[in-house]
Figure 1 (cartoon, rainbow, N blue to C red):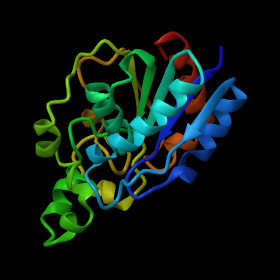
Figure 2: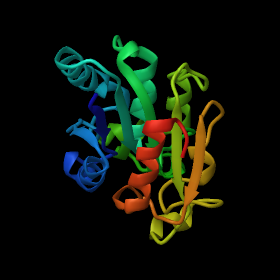
Figure 3: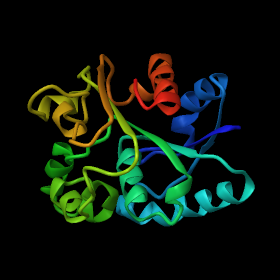
Figure 4: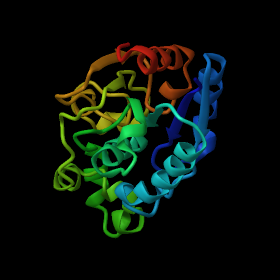
Length: 210
């Protein structure tokens, strides 16, 4: 049975940003599909329809679970999919990489700049208040693992309180209900390009643990 994975990129990125991870996972025996999602000018939950189209296509072609892996905002989108997808029975394990599950402090800062988050609406949806209003459940029937980074070498990271990866606070990645959680010494923009992260992701997709 083929091990199929749907890869979801982060804010202001596209499928190319997940290519390194896709290549590593394919070498580890997985069949990957990386999506191009409207995660710049629209709230992240509006991308649910795009993910559903691909899930429908993949379900129609083969049996077996479809695993979900998302970097940053893509990881939040996974939780929205798990809340509303019509293909629940076909979804396998899920991995979030550097995902702001409790919101992004930098998104809050950006919201104070007049008009900025009205233009970059995905960023607006990363505000903690917006995420709370979605009522994403902490506990689900699905096995979800989260990988966080704690290397802050980005200047925006200086605006953050506590341990962070230069974009996202470590405390925002973890939430109750995760099947497993691990912290690695990488920054936000590099973490999903690391072989170690791909290997841990593959292990979780196979076993439900890192």
